[in-house]
Image (tube, rainbow, N blue to C red; front, side):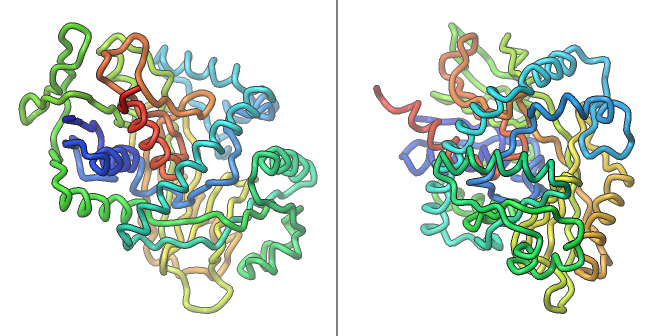
Length: 404
């Protein structure tokens, strides 16, 4: 069949990879270069076995700080936008133990599927993307937060994840670069099988592989709207003209919700703005980490990608603006210097900001919509887990196209 994938972030490229591998004729359309949206500067962690939904019961106690604090890593900035308010209300409704548990179960299953598919792709294509599998430590700074993390660990263990609760001493044994942080660690969850990679390099590698397969790319091409006739998408109207196909996959990230509304479809997706910096690591031993690290208190992740350290964090519910706030970049730099002093000369920070397409529960939307065209499949709403879940989501899209 002729397939048209709308969007060339990691989710769209993974969709194109799986669909073309299944024998479909694929065209990919994007307004920019692959990975230039939320994918290129993301946190680089592939979190297959450790999931902590943003919609958590603990959010309620933090709500005043989220609304008023200028230093909170998660910020809610109300806009004159009814979609933001509706998303916010749904998010708060999802902040309960039952929903958090159900989300964890669903995300871990999808992540497992994604790991198998990503590993198979890497074995075939041998992409140069600074891939590593050195594990991950999720640090807690207080006994209370460590107790909550252990509860999440027990749930994930019951679902098949291999994890351990470890002491501050054990953290430093596993990652000597944490030696300066020892006194601030109440404990951590260690997941030995977690991975990391440069998502932009992955996107670039997939672009080359897909072009070699014969996948057609229309880049720097704006998608104006979808032309619908008799309940099906007839064509994508673009700056390059009408693009016809048998089926369409929408993988436009945060732009998916506005595009879907033109079809009369409401997607509960709103952008969570995140930031990152990327620094060259210092050559001295034990200065920069090789194990991926998540600092729960700061809501910052650290991932080693080759000779660089990617530092990512922040979540701003503040609209569709993509400007880089210097204060957020300074905060990421300060966090890095506090946790890993001496890891870099910080000569160049390479600041980045992107819009993570989040659903209130953090569960992505994969497949057809009851009110949408019958030949349009959605692959959207992955939030901060787009890189982790991309290939599993693509496999599910492909299965939906198979004859029943």
